[in-house]
Structure formats: structure tokens, C-alpha cells
Image 1: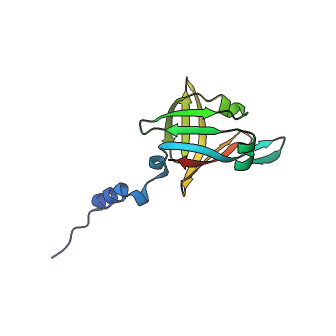
Image 2: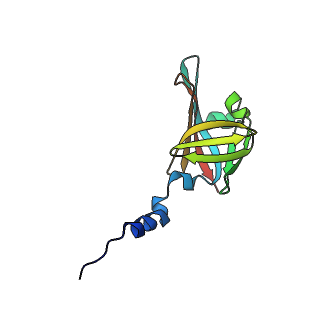
Image 3: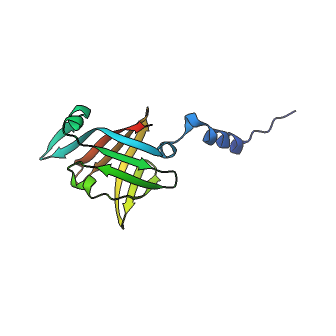
Length: 136
């Protein structure tokens, strides 16, 4: 007796298991900035979690499964302060934040409950590279 092998059933199973969840499916939830890098005057600056706390700076962002996001931030960065609440969308490893007709695209990855978001300018300089921890 010969067994039939079905790729569609295996693919369906792989998509349904949590351990194979893609980052785009893990992004929903509340995230808190814990560290970031910016490039100013051809110099890469690192702002650590301790510096954020000492300066009382923060960026909290919540992504809903319905593809909307809300943010609360007091970071003194034009890129971040210009963002308003709106909708988000994922394509491959890029997340786009859309609000009031404007959009900002970040490259992103999620690993070990840490969301990394990277934005570069046209010359390849780091505009923002942030590390977010998932909040309960």
C-alpha cells in the first residue's frame, strides 16, 4: 500500500504552530524602547536603557492585530516626534507606519522577545536603530 504525501497539509501545520510564527505575527502587543542608536555628524551614538531612564525619555508603541498602532513618546528625534497614531503594515522584513497620509518604513526583526527597528536615510546613515522589549 502506497501512502499519499500532501504538501498542503504540512504547510498548513507549519503555519499553525507557534514555534514557526513569523515576526509579523508576533508584532502585536505593547513594546517599550530600551536602547537605541542614531548617527549624527558621522558619529554613531548609543543611548542605553540607563540613559533613557536618567533623561526620563521613552517611546512606547502598541501594535494591534487589527493593524493599527498607537505611540507615546518624548524622544527628541524629528523622525519619532513626527509620527502620529495610525495603521501599520508588514512586507517581508519591513514594517510601515502610516498616519495622516504620511508613512515611515523601518526594517524590523523580532528575536527573543526583542523588537529591533532600523531606519536609514538615503545615504545609508542610521536615522534610528531601536531595541524594544515586549510589555505585559
